[in-house]
Image (cartoon, rainbow, N blue to C red; front, side, top):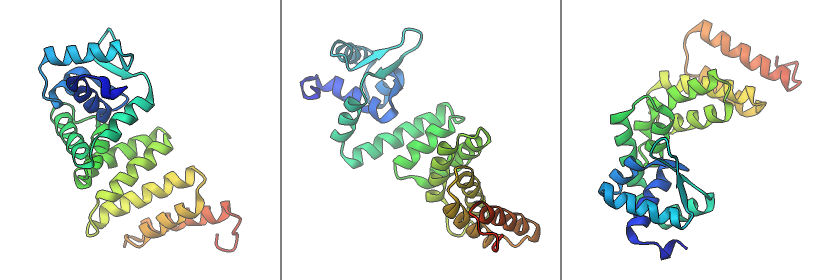
Length: 212
């Protein structure tokens, strides 16, 4: 089905697939290096083939089927996909640096985990505050990939946050591992006492009253 499409439509849709299940036509056309006329023609062909539909109120396009999007992504080589993620991240950073979730995702997918770190950390803490626990864990994991071993303060912040997320999700043994890792990074007695309290709470939840 995809092979039957014109090359310009495949290019636009491939960029759109990297951007997400939804993408805006302006950004996709820019990253695909297409003129507005080319992009509109490519979009119309994709609409005619029932691959995407576009919202009337803005220029956002939506893939009708997840499998079609996955097929487009599978056609991209790893270097090309990484390059598109990086270009998407740099473009978004210049236009809308507050979209921390998307920035963390694209930089991480591009292999630029250190660039993703500040956005992922902010996104994780926002998600935790909203009790969006799976999203918070995802973002903390991105931050964990990007942090330097020598940056003990940020590592502490990540491990402590991950410990809280995993405990709230009922994943007690990995939560304990995170709190123990955080404890090793702090030299402040009050902070260490707070972590010990968390570890005691975890032990109690697991029925280990002796450790608690």
